[in-house]
Length: 61
Image (cartoon, rainbow, N blue to C red; front, side, top):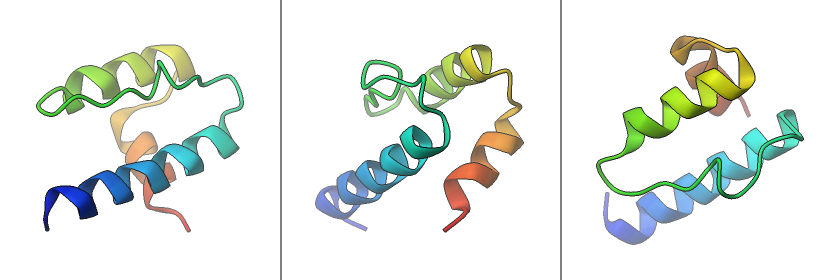
């Protein structure tokens, strides 16, 4: 998977999360390469969800 595909996939995931959790902002979903765990931790704290629950939400279609 190349960088363009990764960015496209992440944009799709952001859209899904924003649809499901209206209180999320672009800042909450800012993804910096290598900072995935940090971002997931922030989302867990803000949404009160486990990492597994967040992965499930992101994998739903």
